[in-house]
Picture (cartoon, helix red, strand yellow):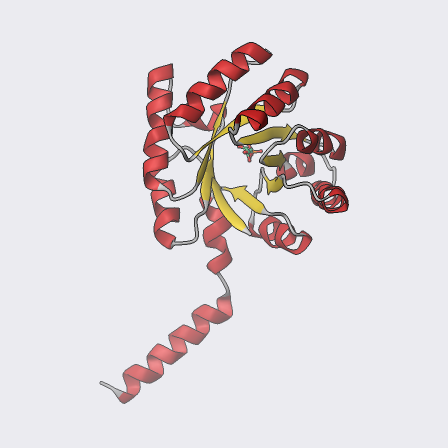
Length: 218
Ligand code: E4P
């Protein structure tokens, strides 16, 4: 399972990269705005800064919603850096753009996916990644994990290469559950990755080992 971090915060990206388990980064316009990154030039520069920190894919989202404009914007993003994956929303023109990018050799991440039918369309259009938003489905009392299972089944039935990128991950149990289902990738906040480290028995055990060592070596 690949681990992506879902943020535009460079310090958090560096921290995850230094842990040695990071495979990529996802961003979206809201995450960029949260870091105060505004204006086209600053946004493009920020994507390059992220690419220079991580070894892996960096999703950069188009803000155009009409086919021609999406293609123009996506091509510009893809030219920024070889690690860029163009993130395209699941709308009609987005599906057309996914197909265009796929035929042009530009890698894509189909975002804002909330149903198995949308995921099937994204795969048919040749998306590199599909991003079902697990947490946002859970927020409206819908079973987000069930959607991941449905997509896994459908993709396996037909041998689609599109990778399932479980997005909108909120906590460590989402990560574990997605790993059990067989999601190819998870993207979530830094805490959903570092939280995997924690177990009270590890802390108690280490404390005891070190105390016993100190007894015999003081
Ligand atoms: C996916 O790529 C999105 O950026 C993200 O996972 C959305 O998550 P949220 O529901 O926490 O905003």
